[in-house]
Amino acid sequence: MPDTAWPAPFTDPDVTAKGETRASVAFKGLKTLWFNTGTLCNIECVNCYIESSPKNDRLVYLTPQDAAPYLDEIDAMGAGPVEIGFTGGEPYLNPHMNTLAAMALERGHEALVLTNAMRPMMRPGVQDGLADLQRRFGPRLTLRVSLDHYTPALHDAERGAGAFDETLKGLAWLVQNGVRLSVAGRKAMAESEAEARAGFAALFARLGADIPADDPGRLVLFPEMDPEGAPPEITTACWGILKLDPATIMCASSRMVVRRKGADRASVISCTLLPYDEAFELGQTLGDSLAPVKLKHKFCAQFCVLGGASCSA
Image 1 (spheres, rainbow, N blue to C red):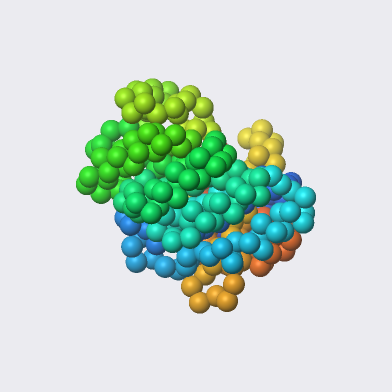
Image 2 (cartoon, one colour):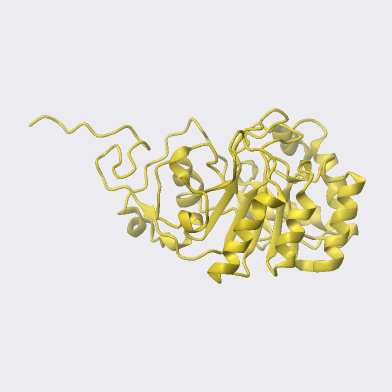
């Protein structure tokens, strides 16, 4: 009999290139709803997960009118309070960012904003709004600052000359104003996880920042992603082999709202890392988005299953 012609890796939603059954992740309940505030960014990183840059406007600025129906849905589902995450691009380029955070916080949710803490966040109007949110909501607002390494050389290799010093100025301002903080680094830039956490701990101590470096929710070390890499596909057998519960995978409990350039309204996708892949677009409402997610992208393997990472706190 002739050999069966299986599909290329990460193409068929149900079958891998070896003819095995592809794994999927069932939705178990909402813990985090992400809003992508837009893909424009003040810098262009070497290995940005979603290719944000000063020119990439494939996802446009999200508005309060875009976000409100999804917050209403959470209330209608009885799913709250949850974590509302804001990512980009650089969220503080979006003129509505402080308003969006306030909308989430006023409904009793926690807000997590991912930022590089550089010039967009340091504009006086943005600072005034942040200080007001901190006064009103205290530790329910967290800013997660991107700091790829605790040394300037490795951070600047990713983000450009001078980026480390500029980010530290933003971190210092946040510390002075009592904003609850976490930091996101990258595993590939570390000597080992233990050494990396020790290095970050020393930096936080110098800054006077109350960020426990041994807490993986406050110092998040992400795996490096390789768009050209060839990770193994995840099959249904992998859960047992890896001794991994699919309910721990990010898409079991989170979704992300985006608005594409030219679209007449926002939509929901399954993953913060895959905003351009139509296979991960799940509909225009949260209710539409609750179907199982088939792990048919290499980032599913690299970041979530094998990398053990999650964008949520």
